[in-house]
Length: 179
Image 1: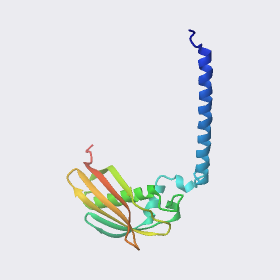
Image 2: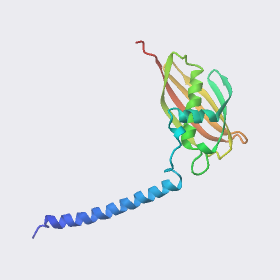
Image 3: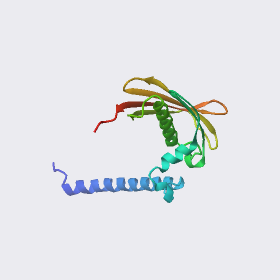
Image 4: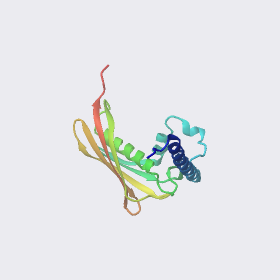
């Protein structure tokens, strides 16, 4: 009984590799078309390259309604620059707002001489908020100890009071190093 020769095995593996490569190129092409259809390959304006662009953009969306110890309430109107391809508030924008509001809640309790480190941010996207919808964003501290603080943030549609997004942020409280 003769063993298969190495050249025969190489030729069959090169056919498989050629087919896999063609499939890969097809998938890459399809993915590029998807990104182009949603505008991902458009050139970014020069202003968007500055260091604090995203923080400034999101902060401009929020209008503070009420602040007290452990609680912060804000209003947010969904504008076109923070929507996704479906015309609803982008999930990343929801997460950034949740982090900002949770941090603001924590800062109403923790002194400025201590650093806060975001250890966890858990999001629940229950529904969506469309363009020009006004949201109420309410944050509160649900647990506070010497080293850990947990904040909860809810996003409600102002008109119907329907909860569309929720978040929970865990902060670690660290004293500043004395150098």
